[in-house]
Image 1 (spheres, helix red, strand yellow):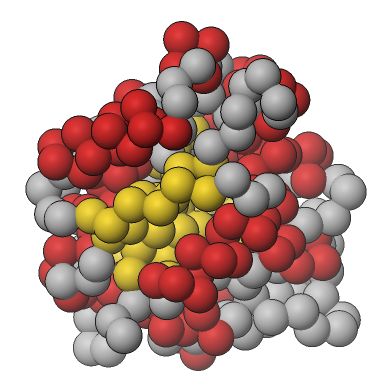
Image 2 (cartoon, rainbow, N blue to C red):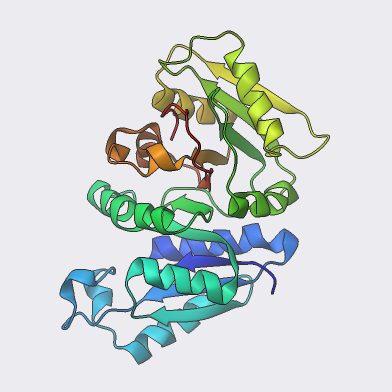
Length: 285
């Protein structure tokens, strides 16, 4: 079965934007699209409702009808799954059903809602599965294939997870220009740190073969602000971050560079999980 892109949707405008962008990204390799909606009866399960008050009281038939209308508005056909399972179980089931190569979801610009989504949806998904995760901010101009992609890397070695490696052909199919962004982390003392970050991008085949990549180094700002400054300076329309299990999924996520970037980023962010390895320092993730 051809790998698919699975989009978590709550029937909001932000979720529809994420679904539309996911369809655009999947188009070059003709990957199927699937919509995953978590349905919980607001009367029986009030704490598990993941939609707004105005949307919450749809019954299952109305929910399916709304999802079919959403699918009809997308540029490519999309399968639909409505699940009554908890989030992580529903995602695992969808990955098995659709052989998902990429998960996608929208991010609201409202701070409290963003915090809720990151901690109660994005993090549990990444804890449960090493699948790549695309986060599409509400304010992102996400209506075309990315033209310039920034890879935010530090000098520490990493190895992509197998699902991340399987996604690389899709990443390369967008024919974008790549910039490796290296911001100085406090523990990095060695020379040629930016060159080592660039080498890690090549070793993990993040860069298309034969395509040159620029190196952008930032030493005057902390990693979080440095990455955001680099995005603006290079006019990137997508950011790729490496999600290292020991740090990204740890208890200090709210203080991590990734968390800082996600709260302010105005472009879609692709999180590529890496394998856990001993001896790594908690850096960008």
